[in-house]
Every structure is written in structure tokens, then in C-alpha cells.
Length: 112
Image (cartoon, rainbow, N blue to C red; front, side):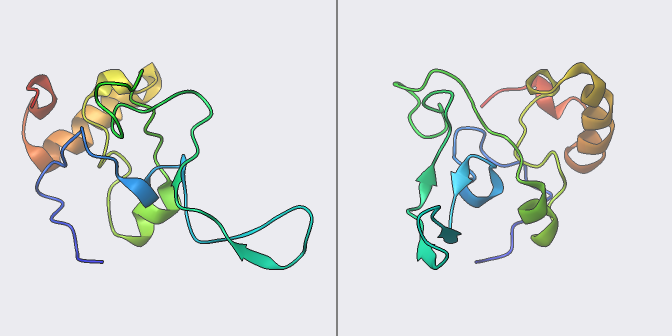
């Protein structure tokens, strides 16, 4: 995997795959067997089809940060969150302060 330029805000219409909690990858253990088995890659969101996977058929942006993968890649917790409106009220101030320090004032006001 190539290093990401954290100074550039990612496209909010692209699925961040392994950086989303809903995206299941790698090895897993099925309940029927104690042996590791390969788990199919893909979104496993039980809520609906994410607009990041299908902009026309999707019903909502279901992105949920997978914090261990974000930390491992050296990405901030908010990296794939496009606006503070996508967060619970308690996290909005932190998002604004931390993301504006990285991407500039009111970056979240503009849409792509």
C-alpha cells in the first residue's frame, strides 16, 4: 500500500475500504470450525447500501471509522469524514479544530 498524503482531504465519494469498520477483510474464523478461513472482501454493512459504494443506488453514507487501521496507517481519526454533520454532536468541535488545522479553515463548508 502506498502512503497517503494526509494534507489532502480524501474524496468523500470513494469507499475507504479497510479504514471503514463495515469493510471486512483478511482472515476470520467461522463458528463451525476453529481453523482460520479466508473471508470475502467487501462491505458488510447491515444498515443498507452505502453511497460510497454506489452513489445512485446507495441510501446513506454508512462510513464508520476503523480506528485501529487508521492509527496503523498514521491517519487521523477524522480522515475520511467529510463534514462535522456526519458526527454525533460531542465530536463536532474536535473534528472542526483538528481537521481545520490539517486542511484549512472551513474546508468542510465546500462540497465536491
